[in-house]
Image 1 (cartoon, rainbow, N blue to C red):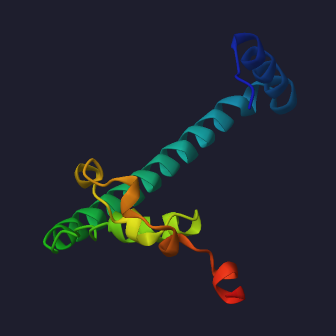
Image 2 (cartoon, one colour):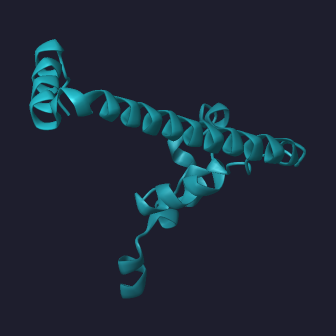
Length: 121
């Protein structure tokens, strides 16, 4: 919406003067002023009513028990993700501190045989 500056307001007033005439212009100004005052009163009344209703419901909601988020279980999702990537679930359960003690010889080829090879045997 464009802003109204001084030149635009002056043009609007000149057009109103030409349309309504100098005798009707004061009456028109009074009626517009009265309408604006009534509009402001009604909007202020609605605002006060809304704020009052908001204040009435405010303490009732604050007395309720606070909602605590459910604990997130990241550990349970890790075996599924790593199994989908082809990492054995047993290897996924190794804690990083224990990983220093695990040697590559601990996993034998019989444990890592794919399903397709097992079916052929």
